[in-house]
Amino acid sequence: MPDPDKINLKEKVRRLTHQPGVYMMKDRLGQTIYVGKAKDLKKRVSTYFQASRKLMVAQPKVRAMIDLIRDFDIIIVKSEAEALLLEGQLIKKYKPRYNTDFTDDKRFLLVRVDPRESLPRFRLTRNRTDSNSRYYGPFAHSNHLRKTLAELRRKFGILLSDAKPLDLGDGRWRLYDDARAEIYEHENEITEADYQARLEAACDFLDGKAKEWLAELKEQMTAAAKAQAYEKAATLRDMITALEATTHRTRKFERNLLGTHNHGQVVKRLKEKLDLPTAPKQMECFDISHISGSFCVASMVAFKDGKPDRKNYRRFKIKSFVGNDDFRAMEEVVGRRYRRLHDEEKAFPDLIVIDGGAGQVTAALKAFLGQGLEPPALIGLAKRNETVIFSDGREPLNLPHHDPALRLLQHIRDEAHNFANSFNAELRSKRLRESILDDFSGLGPKRKQQLLHHFGSIEKLRAAKLNELIALEGIGKVTAERLVAFLNTEV
Image (cartoon, rainbow, N blue to C red):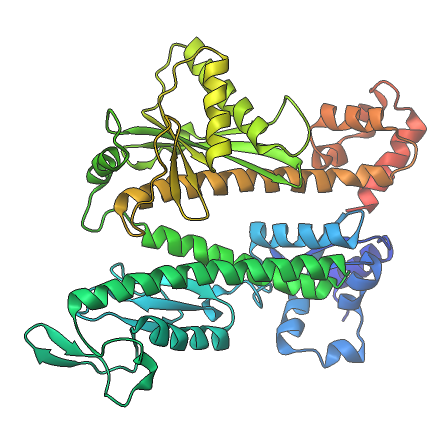
């Protein structure tokens, strides 16, 4: 007996448009189980409901998913490139169970170094298993990674997982048999202290290599999208998403400040390292986010006693201009934040951290001076070498890579960066959803803005009743009826 739900879905498919967009397959409970993109929504979605030979021989995973589908939603966009962008955002948002091919970060390798060993070795792993080890990566290409580790052994004289160093007594070790030519540039018999110096150099190199490979993947994705090779671009995008998600978790894992220091100790250490007048118990950090000047926003995160103070996080839309100018945006949001605190007679933080280098720090300082406000301690953290930039003219400072004070600065910087990016993505997603009105004839830009302003979102506009639309100035009965029909068709 035919499934009535499937029959209704086929009728819904027949009403679909041939425009590009994103589709979301849902199960009986309304949960999104798969998100896909399409150049032609009607052609693509219809393939899921055709009893064709192609589907009959499909992979078991695909057949299982099709059996679960009881509804679907679509979002129409202007181009396949927009569909590619929106698909990735929705996969991140809903984490559908059948979008696992490129979002399961367990297939990426990490490099693990356990500092508790007398001579720590570099081992490959797919999971973070303890809170004492350092982890580097993730890395998408296992062959490249293994070659890199072999190069690290030659370049820095470190140990890999297969090594069996010999304790010679008197504090000295023989790393490899004399026949091991891989370390010919280095002494084979060394002390633990000598080996530690090699270890730190190799770790710094490996950390940079992970960032370098991630940047290469992003360049490949951009090139594929420009060449309209959207399937390849989507594959690379999903790989990058998984890598960045794992990298973020790894950084948080590595920057666990509790280890041998508590948060209070780290805050005091930061005071000493930066030569601050007081311990920075209250810190605020700013970051700017945009895509080629579009959707320019800013974030501010707050830390109290070395820990996130999320109730005091703030997000800003740039109001004074439109375009791509990080310095001007930084000056605006810093000025707005501390003018408001000053007017409300609230205390400034002990330390302001700016995500950026000398230009961003100068812009933030200008915001204070331009309003006659006395700035608190203010620094920047430049990403390239994690260099601390001072606003008072002191020479830039580079803290040791694993110094807890630097980890705290990195933590607050990363938090601001992620908070800004999530706001940016939220605005982009909203704009993509709202672009559906551009495909409805009979409404000018002013009326479209009127509708969105009155109802607040496309979802609320779709739920509006006919008389609510007619009640608006400039929306006649015929236009209102056409709009209701259009919105109910373009799901």
